[in-house]
Amino acid sequence: MYNNYFSNSANCDKIIVISDTHLGIDDSFSWISKNRERLVSFLNDVPKIPNVKEFVINGDLFDEWILPAQYPIYTDSNEFFRLVAKNNQEVVDSINKIIQTGKIKVTYIPGNHDMLFNKETVDEIFPGINQARDVLGLGKYRTGYNNNIIIEHGHRYDIINAPNQVSNKFITGNYPSILPQGYLITRIATTSVVEGYLTFSEPDCCDIDQHDAYLYYKACDASFGVLPLNEGFDKKEFPITINGYNGYYSLADMLPSMKNGEITAYLYPNFQRDWEAIQKINNVKVPIPFCKEMIGIAQETSICHKGCETINDVVDDQACAQYFNLNDCIDIVIFGHTHRAEKIIYNCNGKNKIYVNSGTWIYGNTDGTTCNFVVINECKDFSSVDVYIYEEDKTITKISPKKKYSC
Image (cartoon, rainbow, N blue to C red; front, side, top):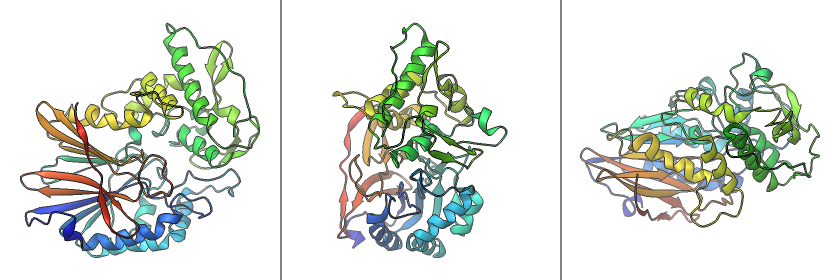
C-alpha cells in the first residue's frame, strides 16, 4: 500500500522520523494511551515501506515528567524507564523488531521528557540501537548521503526545557544535575491550580537584569495561571528525589517574588543571569536573548495577538539561526518538541532549505494533528522531505507545506 503514498525511486533511500510518543508509566495519566495501538500498527508497517534505510526516534520516546505529585517517590530514573518499557511492551517489541531485521538503522535522540534516559538503559531496552548524544540530556544526528540533514529534538533552544547544569548547584552540589524548570512545571500541571499570590509592578526597562527577571516571573505566572491545580501555594507537595534532588517543593519555591529589592526565587534563583552559561554548556552556537524566549512563553500561554511570536516559533526559528544561516551544506533540519507538525520552505541566498517538525503521537494534541511521521527521500543528487498523519484507518494524509520564507 505504501507505494501509493511515497516515491519508490531505485536511486533513493528513505529515512523515517517520529518524535514525542510520550510513552508513560501509568495509562491513567499517560498522554499516549489512546493512540498506542495506532503507534504499534505504524511501527509494524515501517519495514514494509519501500527502501527504508533508517528509522529515527527524535526524542520524548518515554516520559518521566507527566507524573502527579501523588505518584510514589522513586530515586532511580533507570528503573523508572524500565517500568515505562514494561507498561508499553508492545511498542518496545515493535521497535526491537525493526532493529532485529538488520536492514534498518534505528537511532534514538534524547528529548526533554526523557533527558535522564541514560545510554546504558537505552541499550538494555533496545539492544543494537544507535544513539545520538552530545551534551547531557541532548543529542543531534547528522545523516544523508551528503551529510546534509540535521535531526534533533529542539529543547536545546527552549529556555524552560533545556538541560540546566547551572542554576540549582546550591541544592544538587557536584551531582551532574540537568533538570530544568519544565520538569517541575509539568509535574505541577499533572497535579493541580495556583490559588493566588502577590504581584509586583514591572521594573524600569533600563534595569535589564531586573526587567529580564520580571519577564521570567510573568512567564511562570502565565504558565501557572492556566494549569489545573488544587494544592496550596506554599504547601510542599511536589517531591523531587532524582538527579541530585532529595526534597519537597512548592509553587512558592518556583515562582519569582520580590526579596531584598530584587526579583528572584528559591529554585532557579536569578535565572536570567544563568541563561548565557546554560546555552554555552548546551552547545548553542547562536545565543538566544533571554527576553525573546520569555516573551514567547508569555505569548504561548495567553491569547496571542495576530503575528506574535510564541516560544514554539522561537524554537522552530532556530533551524535558520543555528543551521541554515551558518552552514550552506545543511539542506534539511528536523525538530520535534513543539508537537506542531509542519513543513516550512526557506529561501536562503537563493537556495531552498526545508525545516520540518515531526509532530507528536499524543492523544488530544492541542497544537494540531497527531500520529505524525516524517519521510525523507534521500537520493544521491537531491533530497526531499514531507510530514504525514497516520490516520486511524491506516490511511496516510500529507500535511501541506507553508509558503516560502527568507532566513
